Length: 278
Length: 358
Image (tube, each protein chain N blue to C red):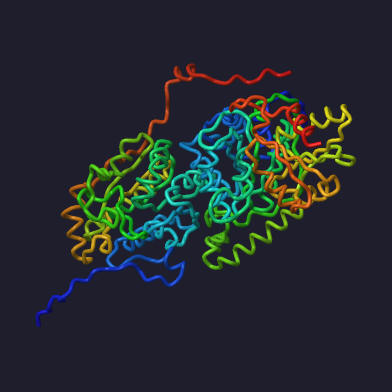
């Protein structure tokens, strides 16, 4: 007997508000990929046996909700300041494995200055960056990663690059910064990509644990609610529209970073002299 | 840091030494006039002690790292001036919601906006009434000398850890830039509660989950605010600090803090030499505000002149304290010797104002 396709496509919606906890910490819409990323993170932490020394920092939004759904120590931060707090935590608990789960806004809009400078300092932290091309938790507004032309609740006529600019590319930006040990863009929309993403997350944590430098995994993630597509059509959207704008691949993978400098330069520059005693 | 020595240093170096003597493990900051001497000093001294100095990308990151370091149990501080202090409000509000300690020094330069770069007292309301969103308080300490910059910075760390409240040292360029002899020694304020709320990973707690109230406010919004109110009341009861000078027989009570209090103290001496009996009450904690002491003195003396280098901010708290029972006059920034950002309130200006009142 042949199955008939449903007459109406399934369009997803945000989880219903039960109370504050649900809105802030639970979960994601049907068809969202963050739940998959959640599982991958947990698997990697288990395999690396780092649950007891992992500390997550999280802000707000769908991607921030990854951290409280993982059973490790965590610090809550203002939106966009995840990497700032992660840097300080890591410096004071060097044996810990610090991870930040961030979305489009936290990494590339409100937290962009922190992203660049945290990476430049080569902070030994791991950033899990979920790129779903829009702001989810606040209701589908334009993000730095929204594709040119795409509609959102604050670009109702489509994102015009002359007005709201072009999409920003987190993984490529990170790769251009010297303090970065590992920068990769992956997806979880096919089984093969799923396995690749797991390896990428593991590598990113490993770079941190080896003390090499900053590591970031950018994961393209379906947002059926904002895209107004069914979960299945969202997979196609990733192939057809997201990957051409945000190509997959390793943009940087180094086993050491040269932190040395020419001693000649330490003789130059202004210093404030110590006040003479007495 | 057991030995005692007396050195001639600026108020800002004294702030730095205060942090160092208090065991501050990390200083984070971003340069801004007129407090860049603090990060410069800390960048020189902290590495010598194996402690962390880090110049961050902005003031938001500076206070954010204070928060991050404090959450791991470390003592950390930052310093800034008005525009930078505004940028920090987001995290200060955040720290209030998590009851996270931290010390922030604001060397006030005047405003609004970019303002000037010399002495001013324009951030009183921002510091004492919360500053950020949400309704919370920070303890605010106002040094009037280099010695107090040193002592109160140490006290700030103690109070901040004791009550888990962000503590602000509110100074300005006059006290900050003046060189004065300072006796350096560690102040012992007593025992502190254990930081059992630390976030350092489970391996450091024998695998136990963190006890930090990840979000108590979500569980009970009203309960959280009621708890905070009770804590604030304890702080008001125990930690209110002020000094009085010759108020016993005074005919007019001056109320002033910070550098202006130094000028007012001089005005008291000058007035008394001319037979005019002035007295001064100088709040050291701006929050909690010594309203009770001011009310008591004001009712007895019958006339109050508030002197502050702003358009009138602390005067609101004085008015609130005396509840309309005594006239409260204000000498604000118009009492400066010159009407420019470089002006300053001198004792002569205060004396002149007093004479016009009596």
